Image: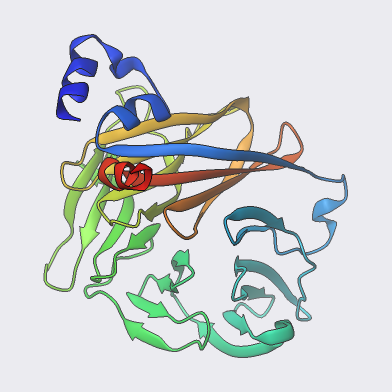
Length: 294
C-alpha cells in the first residue's frame, strides 16, 4: 500500500480526484449511488421535512408534511427521531422532539444558543451541551464553549468546529475543542488565496474510525459555482480526498448523514436543476476494505 502511494506521487497521479487516488493510499471513498429528486414548482409553499434518511443501506428523501405551530416557522433538524426547530414571531426559538406517530415528546426553549451540529446521536448546541434526540436530555460535552461555528464531535468528547477566521483573522480552519484544553487547537488549515477565501463548509462529520473529517464545501461566489466533498486526515491535517459533486450550478443546503458500516449520505439542493441531489458514499480505511474482500 505504501509503495502504491509512492508510485502515485512519483508519476504525478496526485492530479486524480475522487475515488482513484484515495483508494491508492490509506482511505477508500467509494461513491455508490446518486439520485435526483425533482421538485414541483410549489414544493416550498408548504413546510416539509426535507431531509435524507437511511432506510437500511438505502438513502432516500423524506418530504413528509411538517406540522407548524401558529405564529412559528418550522425546520426539521433530524428526521429519525424527528426533531424540529421552531422560530416564532414572539422572538423565541425552541427545539421539539417527536415520538411515535410524530407526536411531540419533549421541548427545549433556546435562548442565545444555536444548534451547531446534528447527527443521530445528538444535537450539539453552541453552549457545549449535547441534546439526546429521543428524550431531550442534555449533558455537557465540551467546556469551554465552542461558540457558534458549525461542528462535529467524537465519541471521546472532542469537538471539531469550522472557524472562517481561524488563521490570522483572515483564513478559515478547523479547530479542535476539548474539556482538557483551555483554548482551541488548529488542526486543519483552509487558507485559500489572496484573491479568494477557501470554499465555505456547509456540513461535516467524522468517519467511523474518527480519524477522518468529511466536509461538504462550496465556494462563496456569486452566480453558478460548484459543490464538493473533501476529506481530511485529522492526524496530519492534510486533505486526502476531494471530488466535485456538481459543477456550474446554484447549489446550496449541503447536508450529511451517517449510516451503518461506513455509509455516508450527502444531500444538497441544486436550484439550477430544480432538484435535491442525494449521493451515497462508503468510507473505509484500506485495511478494513482489504479484510472485506478476503
